[in-house]
Image (tube, rainbow, N blue to C red):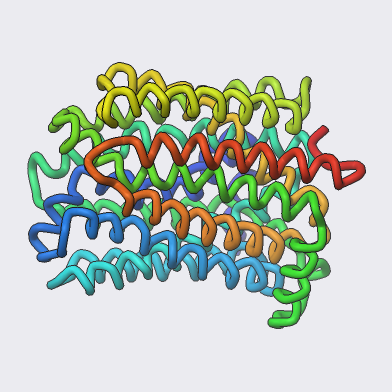
Length: 407
C-alpha cells in the first residue's frame, strides 16, 4: 500500500504567518478581553477598580514562570513537543476561565493560560534562532512582528463584537477555538528544527548555567534589561488602556478603534524596521528610537503636568503614536541582540531572557498600573523614566562589550 504523500515543505511566507499567530496568542489572550474587564470584575465581584488589572498581570506571571521551563524542555525533546505541551495548558486555562464562579478562580485560569502560552511564545523564538542569525534573524522577527501586530489592532474589536451578542464567557470560548486551530496548523505544517543530534539532556543545571551566562555576557544581559524596561512601560499601558479610554476619557464602544489605531503604529514601525535593519543595523536604529522616545516622553510629561494630568485626547493620541512607533522599532531588535551571542544554547537562553524580561516588566508594569489615580501622569512619566533607563543601559552595554552584536 502506497503511503499518503507528505505535505509540501512550509514556505517562507506561510512560516511567517504561522509563527506570528503562535506568538500572537499572548497578545490575543490580553487584548481580546480588554473591553470586558469591567464586566468580568463586576460579575465576579472583584474589589476596587484597579483589581481588574490582575486579570492581565497574572497571565504575565504564568508566562514568566513558564518560559524557564519550555526552553530546556525544547532543547531536550525538540521544539514541537514543548509547544504541544504549552498549547495544552493554555486550552485548560481557557476552560477554567469559562467556568470560573468567582474572581479568584478566574485568576487561576488566567495563570494557566499564561503558563501555557509561554510555550509557543518562547520556543518559537528558539525555532527561529535554529534557522536564522544576526540581521537575518532580526529581519525575520520583524516580519513576524508585522503580521503579529494585526492581533492587537483587531482583537479589542473582536472582543467588543462578542460582547454585543454574548457575555464575557464567549470570549474565552473563542480563545479556546483559536488556540486549537493554530495548534492543528502547527502540528501538520511545521517541521522539527532541532534534530536529535543537537539535543541536550534535560537538567536543572543547564538552566543555572544559562542564567549565569546571560548575566555574565554583557550584551545578553544589557539588552535583556533594556527590553524589560521598555516592555514595562508598554505593559503599564496595556493594563490601564481600558480604564484610561473608557472611564477617564469616556470613549465607550470606540475603545477598540483607539486601541487598534495605536497598535498600527507598532506594526508600521516593525515593517519599517524590517526594511532598514539590514542597511543600518539593529544597534543604530535602537539608539535613535530610544533617544526620540525619551525626549518626547519627558516633554509630554511636562505638558501633561500643566494640564493637571488630563491632556486633551487628541494630544494623548499623538504622544502614544510617536511612543509606540519607537517601541515597535525596539521590540524585535533587542530580542535578537540579546540572543545573538547565545546561539549555542538557543532554547534555554531564549527561556532565561524571556523570563527575566517578563518578570521585570510584570513587576514594574503592575506598579505603574497600580499608581493610576484617574490621570495619565504616572503612565506618561513611566515612558520618560524607563526610556532614560533603557538608553543608559544600552550605552553601558555597547561601551563595555567589545564586538557587541547588532552593529
